[in-house]
Image (cartoon, rainbow, N blue to C red; front, side):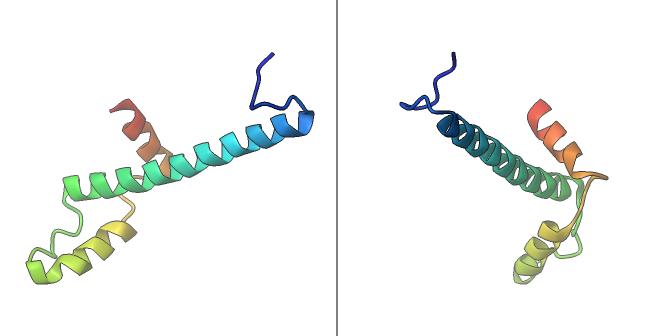
Length: 81
């Protein structure tokens, strides 16, 4: 039997499971956003903003860019690489 915490009540197991699922989804979203930013900057998206005075616009552009066809590809490449 798998123990999750000190209590063995069914409600506690459900709460532990839901917390684990929520944290995994949250981490996946963070990884997807970071990989999207990384790939967009590596490939050269938003390269038209190239000066120190344009740094804020470049950051905004990179944060809004979708560099792959689907967000799950970002997760795939972040985990495999």
